[in-house]
Amino acid sequence: MTLELSFVNWLLAILPVIVLLFCLLALKWEASCAGAASWLSAILIAIFRFGADAQLIALANSKGMSLSVYVLLIIWTAIFLYNVADSAKAIKTIGDKISALTDNRSLLALLLAWGFTSVLQGLAGFGVPVAVVAPIMVAMGFPPLVAVSACLLGHSWSISFGSMGSSYNTIQLVTSIPGEVIAPQMALLFAVAIFATGFEVLYIEGKGSAIKRGAVPVLCAAVIMSFLLWLMTYLNMSQLATLIAAVGGCGFLALWASRHRSEKQKSAEKPLMSFHLAAAPYYMVIAITLIAQLPPIKAVVGSLGWGLDYPAVTTAFGYTAEAVVEYSKIKFFSHPAPILLFSALVGGALYIRKGKTDIGVYRRALKTTIKKCIPTSVGISTMVMMALIMGDSGMTNMIAQGIAKVCGNFYPLLSPFIGVLGSFITGSNTNSNIMFGLLQYQTGLLIGVSGVLLAAAQSVGGSLGVSMAPSTIMMGAANVGLDGQETTIMRKTMKFCLLNALLVGIVVFIAA
Amino acid sequence: MAKMSAWSKKNRMNLLKLAFLLILAGFICAYIGGTAMRTALINLSFVLFGGSMLALLPLLTIKK
Image (cartoon, rainbow over the protein chains, first blue to last red):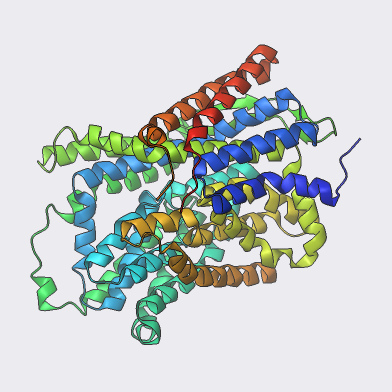
């Protein structure tokens, strides 16, 4: 007995997503509550329509939490590292250093909204880039709407490989596609977004005249960033791909900007600490990640880790979720969390030793981290469990079958928009990948298109979609004093975001 | 501004912490119960997950 593909079954399969959308957008619940509501609806539909039993639900919930723990550890430690640096005023030093580079406003907008936001996304992410850079831009005289829109769009190319690759890790986990297979394809699709977002930041800053002034540096920096992004994925160091690409782009723009530096900037006030001291914990993250990738080191410590084994489970309709060994394994020496935590502790010790902060820096950073991460953790946990219940009970498969049947060969064109939808709903590339990653992969297989390409398009779309996600926009608006004007910001970012998704979709359609 | 009762507003973080702790406890019970087919633990995981949902109930708000 199998559950046939019908409109009612398809609608029920997608209902948890609709519930999430409704709770977030219509009822305006916070993400944790909306996640819980959609999780509950997924459980009920899985039991009463898709033939799931208590064991299947329990194991799907447990798998969801295994996956959540993997992602949350990255989030918690990345935010902790950022807070240690911020508490010691190191982030301000890094920002000031960039601001002092030029008096060309278009270049400055590029440096901050396109480059520095992406550096921060590579290091921390989770809203930090917009929260940090948009107020700096406003303080430098950019209109708040320009600052927040430019930051939202400017870093939207960098999210999948940012935050030490949490979204990228998620797309691998939910689709079981090896990183070295999917990452280069993602990097090639992201090249389109890198060029587009660079020009969009210029347009937002000063329309056509800014594009004229900034076209050459944008093109050069975009080539450098795209190449570095691809190179890092090719070298299987995708967790650092955003960071290295953004640093490369920033470095080029800084060199370019130095040609336009005025005397005023040259005699800027003395910074609180040296740039290199401020960036020391982040240098350490890069160094340890690189060392951990060395073949002799990898051979010794590469297999050390923790992961749970899960048995196969089958619904009453015969849909089977295969058994998995060491599900979402946390490798102690290559998972970003231990590296980030170690760098935060050593970096903090360095700041203390140099007299830039006191021993209380860790306590303050931990307190801020808990405050910021708990709501995110509840939201992510509930949404991931919902996604896993949908996956293991055959609901995701049913959605994929329905979409494939209706869209047919045009599906690849729409593929990035599904990623955008996921981010729009959840405010997170990671959650979008969890929600739709497997669906996109399975749809690809059903319509005879590369599942890897569509999974890559999913993650790229998810990354772009963060720029128009209500939760991200609300956070950005609050940081620049534009509370209540979220719709204005969304209108500004939405058209560019959809344009970027279309450009990526065209490339995917041609490549499929 | 969110329409949230003073009590909910004051205890928002504690409720979220409680919900997260209950989810973590539910995770452990769900795993052990699900892999060892121990019905009592599976049921306990549902109770804990249900508790986490209840902890989130006071946070339901309609934002402007």
